Image (spheres, rainbow, N blue to C red):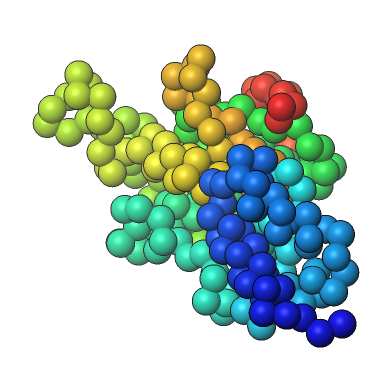
Length: 251
């Protein structure tokens, strides 16, 4: 079947919606229409996948959260740590990477849980505390001469432990504004960034708490292929049970 100009326009429309991760098809009839074409029209789906392949991308999911894309590192659509706010300095990129990978291990410490479609609620204070405990474990590994299998982790724990949990600068706690010199800032900055990407949402009933969405779980599967996640997740499983995060369905 030869695609028409309208077909190519719909493909472009669908991909454009996919690149706006905070949007859902249930909120926009046009997004729902082109997504339905992708799900039901084999020729349309094949052509869309071929175009995405040329961009170094592939479809990870076409569920209720819309078309979720995974991309190759060299793709022009690829996410980079430098895309996150406040990551201009090398050490800030390392912190952002640690928090993001640690968040996946904190919420999904095993492959089985990555297959569980319940979403997780993450208090920023709890995640910060756990990351600090993780870094203490890494320091113990280093002191014992044990190999940390990912070079970035070896640098990350040192940077994290050099920072206090909170720092409000000269204005003090009354300002309520954390500075980049503390770890809680980085935890909340990453969670806020994920909110803008449709991968988390704030909990209006509990201050400082975020709920991870299905979109995050889909992308977490990609992060779970990295060596850093594998190592961190093993440490997480070893101490799991003493501080389980709450779980709920993503209704």
